Amino acid sequence: MKQVLILSCEHGGNAVPPEYAALFHTQRSVKALAGHRGMDAGALALAEALSSQLKAPLYSATVTRLLVDLNRSVGHRRFFSEFSRFLDQPARDCLIEAHYEPHRRRVTEAISSTVDRGCRVCHIAVHSFAPRLGSRERRADIGLLYDSGRLPEQAFCARWQRNLRTANSSLRLRRNYPYLGKSDGFTTHLRRLFGPRRYIGIELEVNQRLLRHAPSNTARLVAQSLADTLAA
Ligand SMILES: [Zn+2]
Image 1 (cartoon, rainbow, N blue to C red):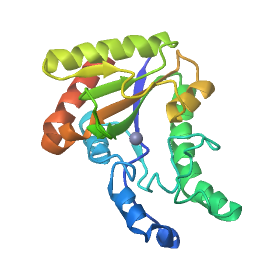
Image 2 (image 1 turned 135 degrees about the horizontal axis):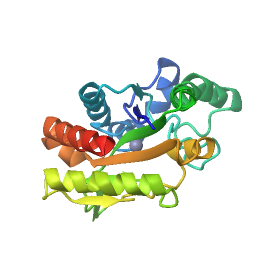
Image 3 (image 1 turned 60 degrees about the vertical axis):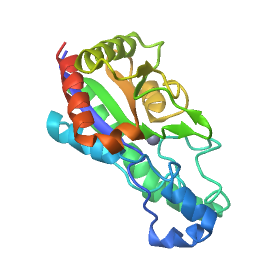
């Protein structure tokens, strides 16, 4: 079965459309917007580099997750943040219609049309994580998040991890860290629409320290190891 790579980036920026600018006037909101909660720093540049090196389509969004989180299900307690939660229903519906649904629809349609052609989709959702959460250091450079109940995903991540380790043995690689691949997220939603033989959904989580200090080396390493894994 032919395998097709599709990339997405849900937290690519911290853009605030002008109609919501008033929500980010306080010192606290400005600080949150500029920090790790506002966006996944470095993730979009990495996703764009992977897209060009691997010649794979990329679907990205740059609206800040503090308005609406494109990686959460509608109704999740962190779908809206404390800065957008109190908006009235029509305003929240507008956010969903203008920013959440278009991205989710574009990715879903790309997967659906590829599956309809008889191919298997390997969907990599590109994210980054802060080196520290509060006082706790995150002890990983790269995390691969998948659903351990889906054997093709498990096998794919095991191979990808081996290829990453072969390329650079000093990297701290972990699976289902810093989050679980099967908790609420876009890939979890897509798994309900597409079976395990047709759809592999993996969240790539890269430490922002790595993306800050060695962005192009990291992109090359991830691209090459991913290409090798897809070719196997
Ligand atoms: Zn993210």
